[in-house]
Image (tube, rainbow, N blue to C red; front, side):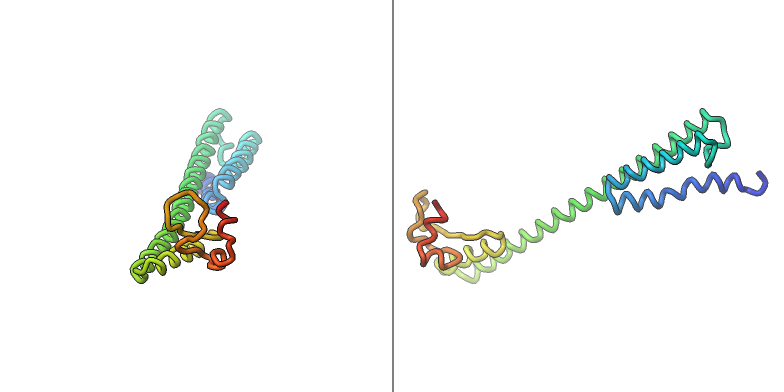
Amino acid sequence: NPSGAGALHQALIYLIFPFAIWAALRLGQIGAASTAFIVSGIAIWGTIHELGPFADIPVNDSLILLQTFTGVLALMSLTLAASASEQRKAQETLRTQVEEMAALNDASRLFLENLEKQALAEAICRLAVERFGLSAVWINQNSSDEKPTNPLAAFPTHLQANGQLAELYG
């Protein structure tokens, strides 16, 4: 074809790739698989009805090219979606580790600021409740498994004063 319309028609096949990339990055593996499924269905229908870029050649050859096209599209979009998913998981893991390191940093700063045993124990209990979302924390003076009757420190502090600590422990 001297006008180049056939080459343009063949080049239009690549217009779907930016949309497949967007679906893989934005919608994840479900979006990538759905896009590959829909594009494959439309391409198969068009090829069977002698429409689209694969229609100008014999049916067997066009179906082989169609299979290659859908395979490349599916492989590219699913691989990209899996990579994006792994990156999101790695970012979440890193965020969690940063929060844990911040808690350890606060604990070490409190340790260095409070070298007195009672103040250190109270600071550790308070920090454990605030940073780790616990409802109550106490530190026993002895290492036995008995109910704490007189702990070294507790947070919230009203637990120790009201005798509620033994109820939480048991």
